[in-house]
Length: 334
Image (cartoon, rainbow, N blue to C red; front, side):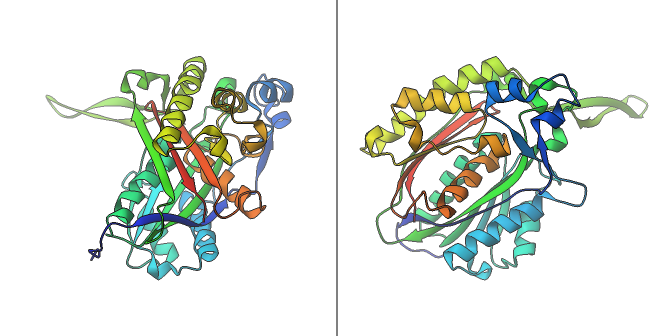
């Protein structure tokens, strides 16, 4: 049963990440499609991506990332109240979060999937904060995990070079201290939905005379790269700017900018518009590619564990992608 405490603050106290061991370099992709390392790197900043094999699972990577986050925070799995899995590549359309709950041994946690593509992690953080601030729950795992290599058309050089697999997690905790989530903005624009899809293709079947059913399967990822790029460099800076003002800060108060790792050119353009210097931009897109909902927590985890991000640092983050959807949040780590 949820507790009934007064409103509390939110803190971010643990993180973790996991990715497949198999790495595909740009030069290897040049053997599959008409491309090159120079072509991919100059347009995206990506040098390699991790891809899962038939023995690996979304739940497995997500569980590993969550275990690392719990270990860092010093919180037992049995004390987790909720698990939010942000994913668009669940292996079970009924949801994967409950598999993670079982693998973790988080016996009292309610678990559910949240589907918002590359915005999913930010949406998950904002969702978790509402349960924590209300006093309903004390510890919530927010996991971003995607295995998009399974949904890529490896004959389409415009999309197959972009995506990779991985998982990242944070543990958020209710606190009586100052709220560490300083502001957020989450948005959607369904009029641009056609720009980025992993769509269902119906196949008609006559079940009995006069009764037609729609069955079928999901297709590969399709994307209008130019429109998504234009959308990102316009919407993301505006959202972050709003949140900076909401938090009564300026861009100079931001210690780190962690954007969804879609494209280095997008990250550079957003940072420039916000007047945030390049040395404050956390980027690992060269090594992972676009891991969708996993990209922000994977980048966060690397920066925390390498010592770049310290307790008390102010982080601006933004996810953006299919929907089209986008969101921004500012929080203090630790």
